[in-house]
Image (cartoon, rainbow, N blue to C red; front, top):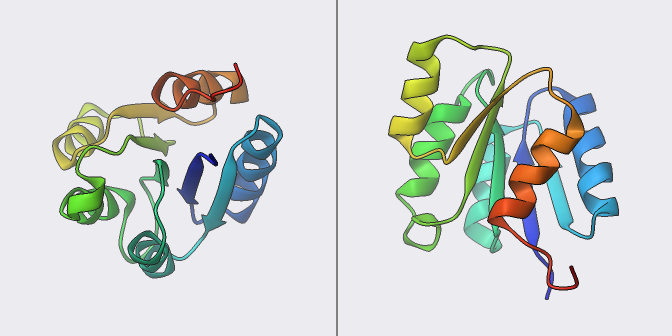
Amino acid sequence: MDRKILIIDDEKSVGTILRFNLGQSGYSVLSTQDPTAGLQLAQNQKFDLFILDVAIPGINGIEICSHLRNMPQYKDTPILMISSRTDTETKNAARNAGANEYIAKPFPFEKLADKVKEYLPLFFE
């Protein structure tokens, strides 16, 4: 059974790097820079975990998180927020929107990978 992850980050390089590394770890990963397209993907497919950037033009990651939490199929799905913003107000807003974790950029990939594995263990490990 594939464990599907959706990454929504306006920085193409972040999505590409995370998609490659998480894919190497055995996950099925999609990424998009467009928040509207990301929400459309979430409606049309089933994902097991989301990685959202906070600072996205248009619909920001906190708003995306709220939208996902309002979808019955994602009320309990893990959501990891990533951001270069480290202020308490932003972290609290992310948690209040339903994020499970908040990881400050830049971060070593292993830190994110450990959180992903914590919420979404692979069956062959």
